Amino acid sequence: MNNQALYNYILGVTDNSLILAQRLGELCGHGPSLETDIAITNISLDLLGQCRSYYQYAAKIKGGDTTEDSIAMLRTEREYVNVLLVEQPNEHFGFVIARQFLFDVFHLLQMQELQNSKDETLASIAAKNIKETLYHRRFSSDWVKRLGDGTEQSHAKMQEAIDALWRYTNELFEITEDDQKMIDAGIGVDVSKFKETYYKQVAEVLEEATLKVPENKYFQTGGKKGIHTEHLGYLLTDLQYMQRTYPNMKW
Image (cartoon, rainbow, N blue to C red; front, side, top):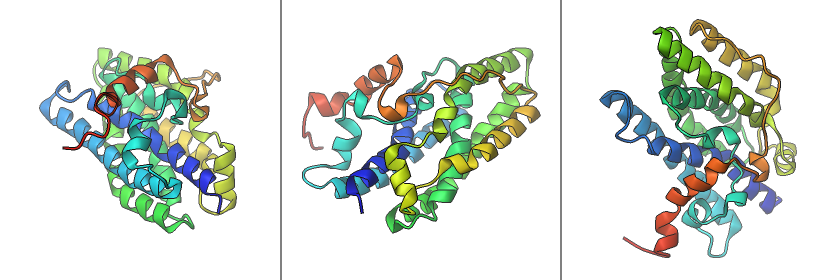
């Protein structure tokens, strides 16, 4: 077993959820309605809960004085390997929903495959996450339809968000060197195998929402290699503030 490759693979899976959870957490108290505000906050908490299980396992693999907190809170920007999609800012509610939807469709397909991993810990975490991820996908899909097939303004904003975020979707299916090692070992998920299914499922929801599938063929990448947009640094400033200001603080 290549422990370093497994460690890196786990980060590749769960950094997405951590960064997206932080983005959603920024919206607490700012939702368009009380019900939606609570739902978004709960999704953020779901994702953070999932992160804990992965990071605890990663810390065990890494050994030494590594903890779930040090992995989540004390890495530098270039050490995070989340995709660029999840770090994009909350421009408006349409952006929040579009970003969530484009990730949720992928995340559910990924968890459905990861539950068959030969690594029993990863398989059990994925199996446990599926119920929550199903809810996330249903929530974001419903809102895409409501906004897309709503008023003229909501339709325009939803289309704007889909068009702007589309460039980040292809990175979801990139496979790193460590990913490939874990795929070959029967531990990791070959995400390229459900790329066609992903775009088909996304297109079906967009069509029902009276939205157009973007035609641009240019895709932006870099997150999986630690090369991020300018937005991640600002996000990490908030995420890591307490840990860096009060090192080893205990409640």
